[in-house]
Length: 74
Image (cartoon, rainbow, N blue to C red; front, side, top):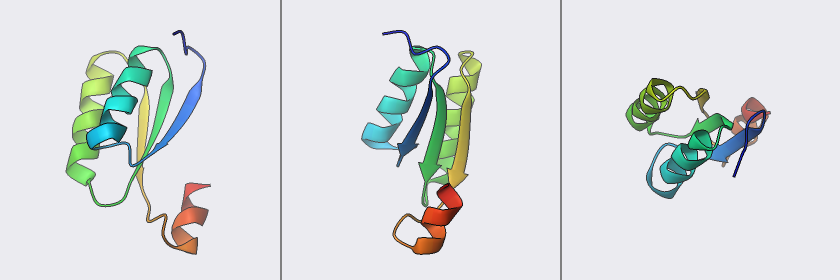
């Protein structure tokens, strides 16, 4: 699967299944936008791993259970 020049938003992308998805899509060439709520350390670790492998990832914290958090994600 070639995802070069594709941008992917992954909510909950720093841990568990979201982390695996982030890594796999990054390996396929996608630029990752990774939203997390409380997993700042895991998000930083994921960012380090993806960037060490030549990928592009942007991480950001937001609470998607609130209107403000949803607006911050836009």
